[in-house]
Image (cartoon, rainbow, N blue to C red; front, side):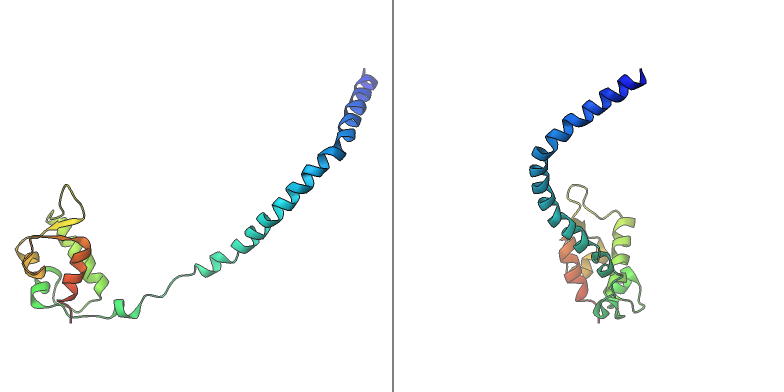
Length: 136
């Protein structure tokens, strides 16, 4: 039985061997197609080194003094623009001033209306522009 199995394996092994030369031609095309993929993988390896931690922009990190109107919302101590924006958002969320239908809009209360120049509704993008007028 063992010899019959070995003989069957040898004949099975010989048949694909005869087909291999025909299969090599498409395989050569595939290897040519794989070479650019290998170059792409090699090009991607240095990318994580470039993704190192970024330095914050000095203009954003400069401590600025808020006006008296803005100080009623965020406090009177000098702080960077990023902190002012965070504190305004904390105030908006605490008092539920974000519009329920369109989350990009802010419904101003009395304190924020003074900061926003008398406007009742302001978009979140317009908010940063209006707040910058109150920073020195």
